[in-house]
Image 1 (cartoon, one colour):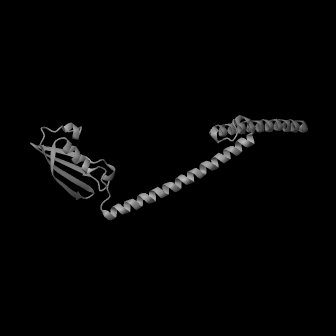
Image 2 (image 1 turned 60 degrees about the vertical axis):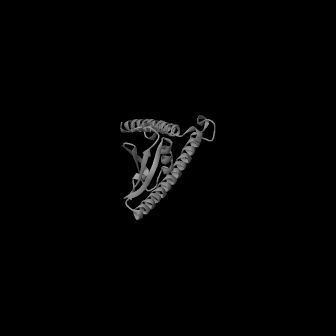
Image 3 (image 1 turned 120 degrees about the horizontal axis):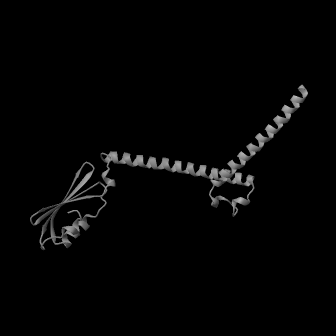
Length: 180
């Protein structure tokens, strides 16, 4: 009797092993299909990835992963270079004065009208990102006569003060600034 039960258990374990192996192969096939579905079609050398063998598909996946790894390393290298350049620029700015955030901001225009007189104050960073002569030309085109232009630097800001007299009637404030 023992022998019969032993053969039954070995036959049962063979079936169990076959079932386990079949399930493992099905799972591996599903995982391979999932991996291949993640790879862009333009990466495959052949027209359609359905015609590739599973081995070829896995080789394509490995190749794509290697390309992505190289790309990530290149991007990390660029990031380090950009950070080094930013640090060098920050060190350069600290040598000239306190760090400037106004360089990244547009210039500020302030208008004050005192009867026929006009005062225009332009506030910008060290690196002017506007043309002062264009502002003066606009004032003159609108009928103002520029008397004086003063420049003063306070910290990391540059103040341009323009004093003008309105000669030709009323200036159109809308032309100089929409928020006037």
